[in-house]
Structure formats: structure tokens, C-alpha cells
Length: 102
Ligand SMILES: [Zn+2]
Image 1: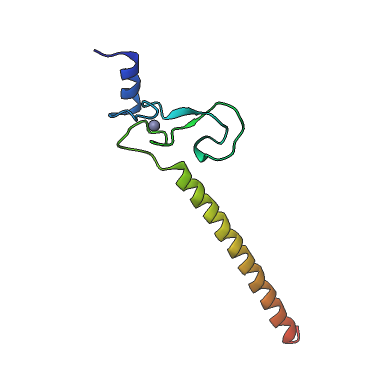
Image 2: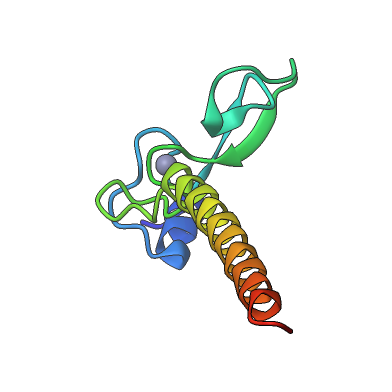
């Protein structure tokens, strides 16, 4: 016997539906902060499921959006650090040039 729900799960490749989103990959949150938690607007908002991260499968979660957000922030910090170091190195080269008499 196959119903729409089972066909949907099959189409998504879900073998064991995630208990939190029932295989949908999305769920509704009570605030606009969604899976981030913390402070958000008072509005029911649909976003990625914070248990399977969209896969819908309890045993094969996709990569955590929280983890990705941390990695993106870390990457931005490293880029800013590199830009500051490049600027300092450029300035040091300029000073060395003028110190040597131009
Ligand atoms: Zn889920």
C-alpha cells in the first residue's frame, strides 16, 4: 500500500523519517529566530528542520546550518585578519622604500 506521504518520502530518498519534521525537512518555529534560537520576532516561521537539517532522514542528516554559520563567520574573521596583515605589510614595504631614500 502506498499513499501520497509514502510516495513523498520515497521521492525524497527518506528511509527513516526524522521524528521532528516527519521527513519534510522543514518545520515551523514560534519565532523568526527559527533554528538559531534566542531572540526573534513573534511570528510563526517555516525554516529548515534543526534535527535532520533538511534531509528528512533521521539517520542521514545534512550538514548543520549552525555549523555552516559558524564556519562562515570564522572565514569572514580570517579574511579580515588577512586583509589587515596585507595592509600592514604594504605599509611596511612603503616605509622601507622611503627609508632607503625613495
Ligand atoms: Zn527533520
